[in-house]
Length: 124
Length: 166
Image (cartoon, rainbow over all chains, first blue to last red; front, top):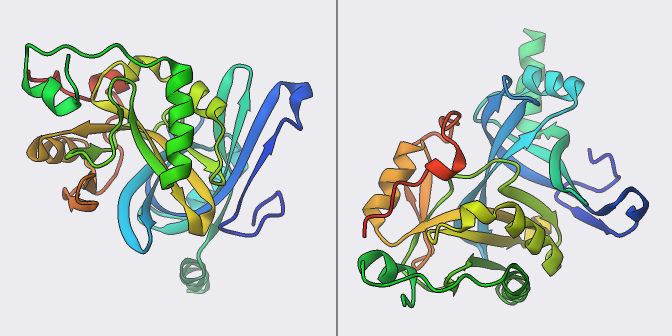
């Protein structure tokens, strides 16, 4: 699902390679998250995600991130396929340049159980 | 001069120490993050590890919550993040939080509110519809009954914490 060719649940950081564009770092990560909210009225629209962090098998705190979705087609696909409370995989790219940093949703995938239930609802 | 956040908030006669420089704080966070796979770090009190505090996540915006690739995060990243959130971090109850999740090879970076009072943290979590707050000392979550849906749309980040009662 990762457009950069990484398998799910993997991450990559490119540092310095894009210096000509004054981008000094780019993080692309894929994580499994719970959809806490979808905010279509924001500009760009945003997806509020929650993820329980753990360490050594022990549950930790919940990390929340509001991820901008500037790609209108991606957001349309997102809203047609997922609902609040769903657990999905998201790929987020964060770009660091001279002016600071910005993050954007670059892809998402339904987990197999949700994909199956979506397919069933299409068949009905 | 207050030695820690709890002392500062409970004693009106104490003063905040001078904040650390952004560069020093960033380098310290880089080291702590690698040593412990995570850190909760105050610009005033430094490393908050092991303190009896309750963490509430109130700042999920793209400026204040980021996912980074891998465990090794250079100080420059923390430096830029702190600079971007300098105004928020001037509140001693707000810290830089990092957490490395090995299964996904991802570092999570955000601004987290830490409060010494359990009930105040739960109340704040409920006010912002949070699912849970986190007991940093015991390492356990305390459910607050919220759904996580975003309700703070009209509340700017710098107004989400109540004024400190000292």
